[in-house]
Image (tube, rainbow, N blue to C red; front, side, top):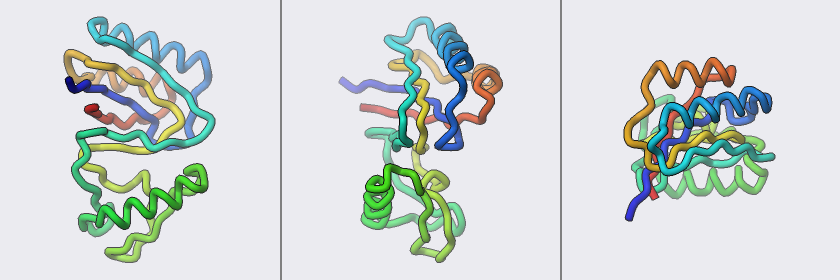
Length: 149
């Protein structure tokens, strides 16, 4: 049986809000999804890749919009992982531009973060007003990731 999870991460991978801000955001998230199986807020010491599980489709260059080869992406991820995702810069093979692994266009969305707010099996999507409220509490823009496992 598949499990759907809504994940919210700061757009800036290194951003970590203060403890009080994070607690308030977690309480709000739980109030937004009272019927969810589980809500959680996790902070890690290092940046991690926050994936979309089975919802993975492809990765696109943010500059020239070319679909990137899965093998190139996997090698770029391996190099970044070996450095603890401290440096996400990449030279794009399609157009030669410099970008970030975090700025690639993941279909469906994915990203990098030290903080993840998640809702397991929500009965609906988060609405724009709720997302804006969380962004205001956390002091950052959030990226929405729908994962299926």
